[in-house]
Image (cartoon, rainbow, N blue to C red):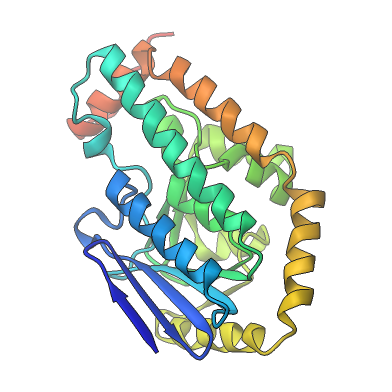
Length: 267
């Protein structure tokens, strides 16, 4: 058993299963730059370790991830140029994680509970399997602050549920329960919160006992057939988000969010 403990990510390997835990419960595991760096380091470690056959990605404190770190986004202030630069940097960071999750040719299971929001939801969609607790809440929250989805959101949803449902999910930004996403086949299984650990472990153990080279080849082929446009989509997101970050709608959306009020958009 290997144990690597970092402030923001816990990494451990047991019985050929690497478990990567995002560990910033105060922010519900929001995607800050330090967290991203720690996740990439853990994913690299799992990728390169021949003992590791399966990876489980999870969040601490009974939440997967609340998505982008709004505090970091605004740390250089609301002035347009600083904000655009910061958003651009954060988007490129999260895009790297999306690509990494697809490019590791080992099965990756997202263990989902509590908040599965924004970039958190989209990173889960990049994984190979998703097991959700019945308390998981999913949301494409970007529209609420005048932004578009990041981490490959529109591309991934379109590949998985088609254009019509993607349009509904991203434009309306409604909160979805675990059963809602199960009906869309966006998760493989929904179980009670008490059963989640065991259910993920059963799947991870089963995958760890299957022929790894065949699984790697299958993932490679699935990437070519289903996800070959991901890199281009991530680039387009950065371009479009930079435009959004300069709009009055974004300024109003983020100000309303900070002031805990409903935004008023002037078309």
